[in-house]
Image (cartoon, rainbow, N blue to C red; front, top):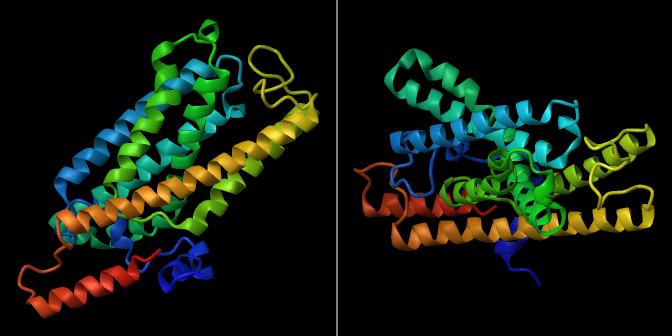
Length: 282
């Protein structure tokens, strides 16, 4: 039987991309004062955004020669990583401006409404990045077909390093039930590859499959492969949830609870901590 804590994780409301405190998407787990945006965290978000955006543009230039860029899951995943990084930067940047210019407050609130989109993309892009890196280097990688080793490293290796770092730094939680969105991506890409094959599509080398392990001339094997990848994505999502929970526990244990007001007395602080814990059991 599930404990009340675990039952809450599986409550139907947790399918939705809604949080009691949207400002959690503007903070790092490790900043003590979470009542206002942190400049150091903005610097971090800026660096992440620039790395993803610049390498994303370069990957498009590198892979657009034969018009096949959109058919690869790697590029779906890296595009997701880039967009979520852009949104995270934009939300935090507007929040910082709002602390300096009162006229920007409404703009900040409007921008913060993007947090469900960011949460969705961040969750899906993170698990997908881990899957892409694992599958590419263990099954697909062929050094003879790599035309640009630097870009190849960024889209198949550095992607996972960056989202892992991000998973350890961000302040928002990973919800178990959000795994449904990752599964939906896996199913969507599977259907896409089947439609693409049926329509006579080819990969950049002229073969009728996008990836050799997803070859619809062998439907049984391909269905099995796709199902296996989806199961792998589910496992990765659960690992992300555990890392997110561990991150929060470590922060509370070694850094203390976040401070909302330096003038709070001990009773007010205790009340805040209890409220924060109840709001963040996700």
